[in-house]
Image (tube, rainbow, N blue to C red):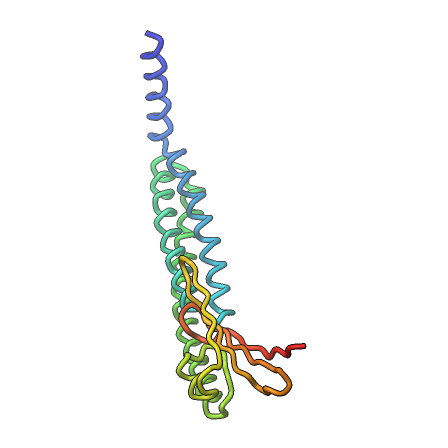
Length: 190
C-alpha cells in the first residue's frame, strides 16, 4: 500500500508540472540561453581567426540548437500562460535568427577580404594568414622538415625552413587543421 501511494504522488506531481508547462519550459530555456551564449562566442572567434570557417559552422549549429530549445520552452510557457517568459523566448528566437543571418553575411565578406589579402601576398611573394600549403610551397619552396601533430580530432603541420645555415636560423610555418597558414615565426638557435 505504501509503494502505491508514493507512485501515485509522483505521477500526480509530474502531471501538475508537465500540465502547467513550468518545468517543461524552464529546462529548455536554460539550454537555449546556454546554446545562444556559446553561439555568440564562436561567432566572435570566427571574425578573429584564420580557421574561421569552422567557428562559423559551429556558431550556426549552436544558433540552431538555441532556436530549437527556445521554441520548446516557448511551447511550455504558452501552455502555462506565462506571457512574460514566452515573450523572452520569442525575442531570443528572433535574435538568434538575426545573428545567424548576420554571421553568414559577415563570413562572405571576411572570406572575400582574406582572398584579396592572399592574392596581394602571393604577388609580393610574402606569407599571409589563410594561405594553403600549395601557396607556401610556391613562395618558399619545399620545407627542410615537416612536423606533424595528430590527435583524435585534429592533424596539424609545422613546416621548417633553414634560413641561414651558418647562423643557425630556422623559419617555422604553422598550419591549421584545414591546412591553412595560421602563423609563422623565425627561431634562432643558440
